[in-house]
Amino acid sequence: MLQSDNQYTKLRWLLTIAGLFLYVVDIWTDIVLALKYFQEKHFVWSALTVVFVLTGLFVTNIFSYAWYRDDMSDVTLNPEGKTTIFGLSKGGLVAFHLCGMGIFTRFYHLLKKGFRVIWTTTNFYTVEERREVNHSLFCLATDLSMLKLFEAFLESVPLLLQLYIALSQNGCSVMQYLSMAFSFFNIAWSLVDYRRCLRRSLPHISEMPSGLSTVIYLLYKLCTIISHILSYTLLLILSPYSTVALTVLWLFWTTWAHLLQTNFCSSRGLELVYRAVVGVILTFTFFNVKGQDTRVAMSLYYSFYSLINISAPLLVGLLSPESQRVTFLLTVSGLIFGGLVVGLLCLVLYYLLLHPREKWREADEVDGLGAENETTRRIRNFLQP
Image (cartoon, rainbow, N blue to C red):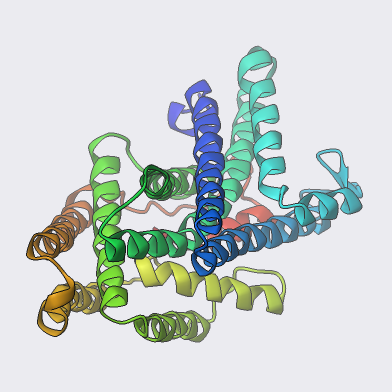
């Protein structure tokens, strides 16, 4: 009998719609904010916001198209050698992705296939067929969640910009609040959605339990990310030249991903882009880049970032006390230190008591992993939470 944890349920389908809503609103608020800056003649802020949004769209569409192309070339996924996928030719796929609609085609295909499976043809599958169909749905959902994870962390850069603008001006408009709020929601949603989809699309590892485990994991990620972003913002307020330090930090993590010799993409050029995106993600939070034991690496990572989080408020208070009100600095410092402490406590609690223990076993044909296809290889080689 198919276990409920491995079923693509109606709730999962409805949550996909919720994820689409968050994704669209997050981009919409950034675009509206860019127009607002332009109307107020803040042309640099407007241009930077647009560039960061377009960069996120550009990168996600590049990977989306490449994955479609790889799946079409995979004989296990496309044994008949069809030149179309989900009814779209290669030319159609190129056109959609050039228009920035690649991720929306994936939402459409997942929702359409999921609707057909869980709402209309529930009783038409044998147990083995249903297991295979559910696995394929979770693979589609994981591809989508990986793209949303890329977009969410590339969106962290404009979020950092909005925080810098708001804190340096000692004020914030309603649209800025909305933009930052939806960016945080999108990051939170992407983290949890990716983790759950990843484990369900790889049946040879144990599933992430829902409930307390998910809440603790989310608190660990969000609290540490928020403290990092606020620390970066204070450093930018202290001196705009802090962008040079952030760029060096990104180059360091990109180089580290290169030294680890990641093997995620099917082409060398795309692998370099992937490592650059990994560098951005590691600038804000820790992920297991190569699927190895990372206890030492994680300890060093958060020790280094704790030093940044502690140093940023102290540097602003000592080097630029006249530019900041005491109440403001105490409030932001409290958020940074509080987020850091809560985040690290949740990290320790999660990995000591709540982290699912890996249960590697030989894959069988029912699992759909007897002969690894391109989609499964891609998911297995992606960032591990």
